[in-house]
Length: 155
Image (cartoon, rainbow, N blue to C red; front, side, top):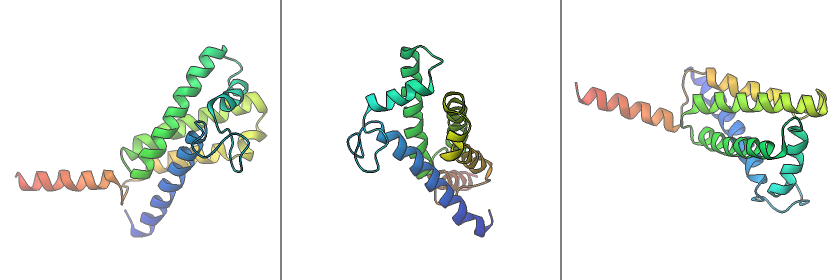
């Protein structure tokens, strides 16, 4: 990877990962209670009110299951992107997850909603990150070096 892309991929990986992680943890009140400054949901019940609107085409129990799966995936993908573990797969998964979210937002609230919140942009950024050939300063890079060293020493 060219050195001028090294910093950009790190910035992109950290920015996307932090966004997913922060949003996912907000649903569990990690950043503060509902109604607090800079808090979107603050707890699961406030998030489920929003998720119910977003997934209104599903029965409420099924919507809650999908919301829980999406929340867990968002937190896991965010953490994996930040540490750089299975980066390509985490980027693909998060890109697909956000694209699905953007489609649900469009269906529930109209196209302006996902555009206002840059949901399509974040999805595209995740998918672009998945296309990069390497992830310097990541656990993936460390694992790759260790594998190469092991193979070299055992020849």
